[in-house]
Image (cartoon, rainbow over the protein chains, first blue to last red):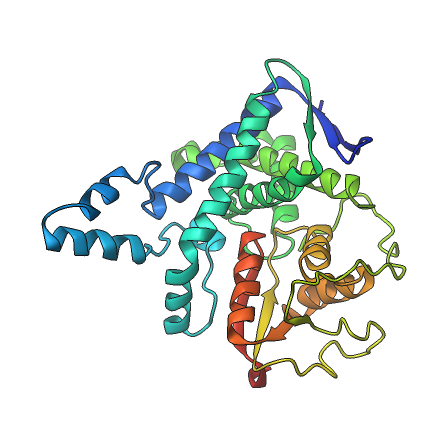
Length: 215
Length: 123
């Protein structure tokens, strides 16, 4: 059972997580990072672009320059939520995406990466996860991005949707015949797990916010 | 937005004004007068404004935290703005030059909040 974040002397906060909890949180963080990279067509190493930029072929150079300046708009609904339009005017939104999306993506990937490193670096088994004061904002942002992606997959679109989902699951547990038919592929079968992880992350973020309340 | 599961005293909002970031050049809405009734009155800082929109995922306590730490709002002002977002669907959280507001919107996106910029007269 996970233990909530608590403030510790020296400005650190710490929580205790079980091995499975650490593994699943780290996995979701990595998957969210991969989703962002894939959807926005970001490479982990930008080598090919750099090579093309140094190419003798002027067209290739131009293309490389253009590619590095024009970020791809998100196509995945969850990635769209992480990189929302900055204006209701599509032309302005497009311009701001060009100016800011690459930096925003870099920050999000950095936050998720730091979270993964802390979790994976805590060793096997149940362990205490302690976070420096400086690392807290990145954890809060990373947990938020993970929750936003899971919420998109759970189709939480309005206030109260998660509560409704929980209620339906409880009814499903009490009345086994009410389980959805299996032909809806693993989207439905997996949604219980997704909902449980979403709840764990919500609880963890809430406890982190409470632990830093007096900062 | 999501309320904390265990009922918490949200009235831990007694005036406790953290220092405002001296590097900031735009002023957060209403920060000059925390007692101002309307969140929009008396603020004429520029032609552009940052709007934060409601969403069903972000925790109320997180939104308050973001408003406090990024804009330097007092706890009570941050709470008021969060409630406005939650109940009215949106709230104006800063005004300033286009450049300043662009960077506020980008910051809100980095925190996972939905935000847009618009001209002040649209509100």
